[in-house]
Length: 314
Image (cartoon, rainbow, N blue to C red; front, side, top):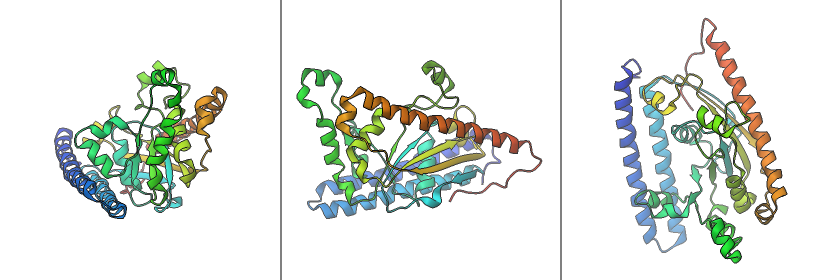
């Protein structure tokens, strides 16, 4: 491990390695996407998708290797033992940093199917990125704007039907979808601007998770509620990790029953939407208390004469 080096040196080294890692596996995924486009048979396309998911697994594993090289991080993780790589999950999480997705894919890569995101349909036309996400079978959403709906009410429900068709392939392919329900990375400035009732979280937005559940809720085995905490990180978590300054990452995963959402009612009835939002707000209040308790426990441990010996991730 190279955490004895000065922070700027570690940052340059980690940035170089992360760029090379992403470029390597991203290029292979894009080449797989081109090959997949030429496949006339669905079974052959599925085989290419499985290979692309292995490439994403390799990207996540290499990220973990880079972490081991540049930092001596202790992973305090609970909840992995209840997970199944052959199941279907919708994962929701608090969002603190651009590093979150690297940490989560690395931690979960051997326990659940590789994470996928719902993406706006327009992103499929972004060079390289769009092809790579398509090759990985990321679901693209076709969202009709409120202005278009007002102009043409017949379009109501079209988005949901289109997304359901896009998710048909996941019925036979174990899948994990991740949704950051806060919609943005947490900062104290954003929390105050929102007048958030939570100490460590932004206000959760119910629309995205409701859309996902109404599109493919019957396919999910569980809702995974993940909480991630960097107790000793500076405000810029990503920079802190890449400079070797982050020493511990705490993760708690709770498998919950999948909420049932009627898409037609959700998008038509304000009280139905409010009820679902209240459920999500309560879940977020519990997460806020959990984060506060984890930070408090960590502060108490830091005052002890000896600390837990750092361990590597699973």
